[in-house]
Image (cartoon, rainbow, N blue to C red):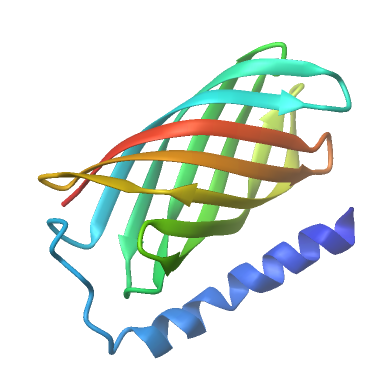
Length: 158
């Protein structure tokens, strides 16, 4: 478990150097600007405990270049899974609309704190005027329990 979390931390630590290398490229601002804020809603599923919970949160991204965005995710799972997750993430925009999200964070559950790492994918549909909708699927590695997070993001670039 610690090796997987160390790999996530190592990847996240390399983000600043990638961001600097990509900063010379122009950011595509046809979608209203480099900032993007989404409200996310969906489900968190913990296979080991066979528990599912409603999940609500926010996802912020600053688009450094056409390839890279950096930001944070804050989620709260309600119900069988009772946890709050805070993540620092990098979004790698692979092709138009398709992005991979990865990053380390902290999960607060059962009155304790646990290290967590996220690997995920999302597809962002542009609706016009900077508005977007994005189905997302993530796998969260945690010291407590690994989880699958399936959400829909409703956002706006500005």
